[in-house]
Length: 274
Image 1 (cartoon, one colour):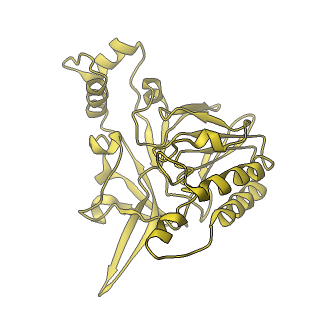
Image 2 (image 1 turned 60 degrees about the horizontal axis):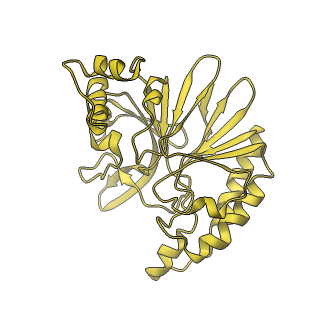
């Protein structure tokens, strides 16, 4: 069973053996960027840890899976990350049986900062199975392994999506969950083109011919970022800057997607919110 943690940018996935907490986009060390712009705030790493700990204890979580962008620096490690991240994971690993990370585009050099017990997966993602469904977990900045397209649900982060509300001269943004379906033919064609494989008249059949298994029809869940300080992409505005191959290739039926606030409030389909 998969469910949203009430009022939190987090998912709980229950299998026959484990209760798994799924979060994305911690961006530890983001305060360094704010400091360079003259905005000086103390490290928020402890607050992020406390929020995770609260969820773990409340729901008796066994495992944690982080869908990328654990750190904020991209290729290099900034001094604050070198101090904060090892301490963060030393404390975090004592709360649960295991921690896994799917690499994001900001996670260059991350493994050197982690305790050896933390498992780091490729940016191409991982899959998890329970009794009824299969789940593909990716960050979202890279194409996943082809077999992940046969899963029932695909979960990703990366985009920091928000919804923008305007009233008179006021404007606010709120983080949102986005639940969408795929344009299967467009996605199969885009993926095969990326791999430079031959595409026939039916891209879905071509996919099966190349890989030996059926192209699925997974429901897509785009997670909100776990770090509340990060800016976002207002998905209902024309200037929304969507990132990653699944979104840039327009393989998601975004206009038909369902939009939810963190508290679970259903806002409607995106087409009615633009």
